[in-house]
Image (cartoon, rainbow, N blue to C red; front, side, top):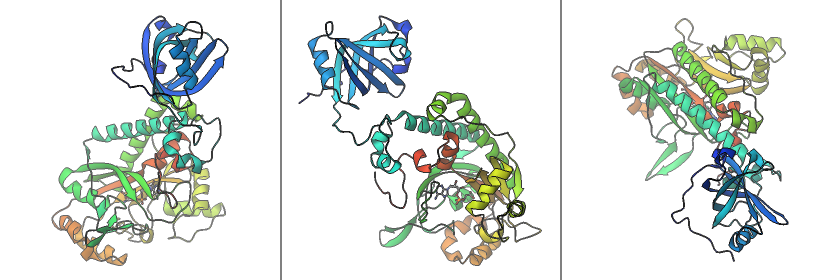
Length: 440
Ligand code: AMO
């Protein structure tokens, strides 16, 4: 049995991608996972992968001590190791440099066989990969996806913070539904029934009464029985809400924030985009806007007939994506298919001051002007078959002067799909929750 070593006082000095041939002769300490172990007669080498990339570690049987050779002999793929050694120029090695080890510590020896090959040389289907997700996430592709997601999140946060928004956290254990179309997950809350939150909707609205401009990045839970490449039962929603603003104002905020995220990913994530083989096209700064009625007419002319007032089914949004382009807004949705909190248009209450942000056929965000008048809100709750009594604690704020406000919710997982070119949202979530998946 291989004896495991301690980390002791050994610490990493460099990530693999920081080691260059200009460091020839320098002693470094690298730490990471073993990928390839090879024995070429007198030479033994392995490739060490860390979060920066990879570096080759090479030992000569004649020169390196016996302990080092026997340690390399025992390495399995994915074992984590610490290596102290000298940097040596090596034309045949990736990036023209390798490390000749003076010490190897085996920190955790990986069992064989692995449940899957995170390097993707042995192909596995998505389900197998998700079953062993912690190992799958070690792949260069997964690292690239989550670095891009992180960059988009950072750019979006910075954009809002620089415009006076305050980041908030609202409860995820709630008493009522807000998104009538989406089903609720009930949970037991001591001696009562409660639900997992579908959206921070009413909380973010009432918070505009205190903080003026708020945003939240948090989970939303939807008990929808969908089984599609774009639906999850737990998703991350990037929500904003803004006082003294209209749908038009927050559409501008959304468009600018999304554009900024695209631009930053394009500027800073080229190595990751290259790993994914995705050539990201940054949309123009102004996204086209079409009304729901125009959308129906456009797809109708192209042969997809939809009665006015119905939601746009997949064939319709597919067609629209082809006709209108990549990032675009569909505005002025029928009241019938928008939630109770959506403001009806003054001149035609059948239509709302609302919008969806689309990317091709994918809905990325939706939002609008909200109803801030308590009487109208109660009326709309009733019209949607909801009991205003259940919303009493929220209505309080509306009764005491809550100002006009607008906002939106952007699906971060779907946004990551677009930025990374993935065609399944599960690729963009660390541990996805869908109808059949509750672990890992
Ligand atoms: P909506 O229900 O449209 O609006 O959700 C907002 C955005 O969240 C993402 N999303 C999902 N992503 C993956 N799987 C799901 N099941 C899922 N459901 C939603 C989508 C969607 O566009 N309260 C409003 C927002 C607002 O008006 O501020 C709301 O929740 O990208």
